[in-house]
Length: 212
View 1 (cartoon, rainbow, N blue to C red):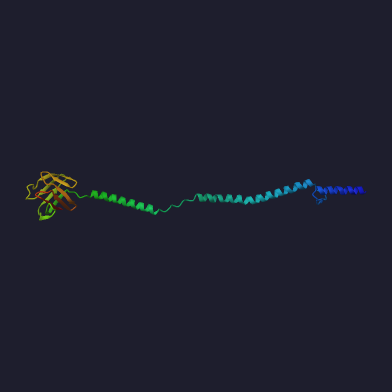
View 2 (view 1 turned 180 degrees about the vertical axis):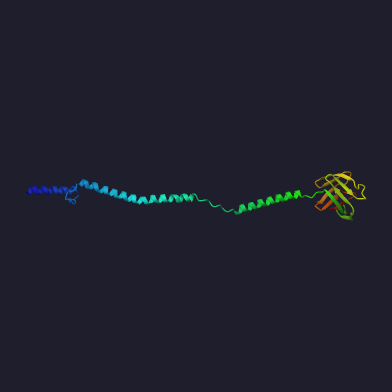
């Protein structure tokens, strides 16, 4: 009888050592196997960790999906036009002024006074070679009539009175055929003409005309 008791105690001790000192069984009274207990605990822990990982990552994925349309809307926003810089406005102003000056120059060229017409002589001023005025004479009843090609002097005291003579105008130099004296256009406007004659007898004349 004692041998049987010792055998039972020895088996119980061996089971205790093999099961890490835990000989207790489950609620059914059966003694669990050591290998089964070791396999169940890691599996339950792994499943628990997997569930936690899924719960943690699920909100992140959902938030990423919701934010994508918002980012797309930001990319499709129209860019507001930038205001013009001060330099570009100044450049535009200078360009506009240049265009106005160009058109103004064109109009001046188009409206340049013409020599063609009838000019009534007002005065004849005589100067010596030192550019000193020697005499000034009124010239009543004398006129010069210019066309595109000829000039006609109307003066009863002039031997060429009423004769149309060809002339040339190169720049400011006026030359009349059959007259040895040449003239320089000192001033030409819509209403006034001033001619300076070449020198003769150590003097020259300044003729002032008014358009008829």
